[in-house]
Length: 167
Image (cartoon, rainbow, N blue to C red; front, top):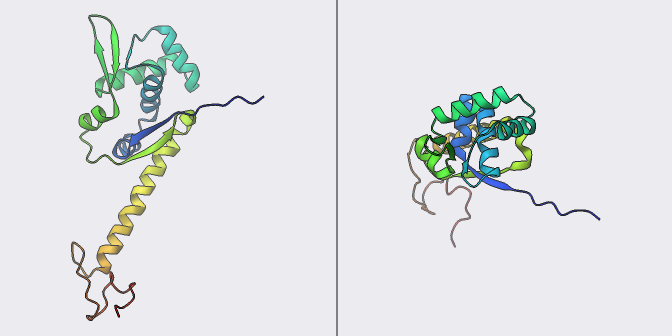
């Protein structure tokens, strides 16, 4: 009998994915996502947990420790020295920390953790294609910044040339 495997998806802010791609901080993003997935937002980073992260990411414990230190410097992870707990910041808090505009997000499957670089690259290329479409659309408007009014009796513009004339 086949087990029903529940997949876990996260809505990753689009700007955050672009920031990870620009800074090439794929390992840090992987560590942060796994900590977010495995815990309830608070964790005591013991050597056993760091070793588990390293095994899951196919890397060394030292690499994971460096990633955790970088995440603390970037304020993606908070640390309380009184009780030795590490706080994993949420997506909305990261948007504020990184000063990212908007709330556009894309789905990320947690089972595809090794493909973080491909995921962020796809976000970057998608952003580039979207920017090219917007630029082309604005050029077809004739230099206008915003949309123009539809006039069925006037000369065709880029917006109303695709519409059927009113009868």
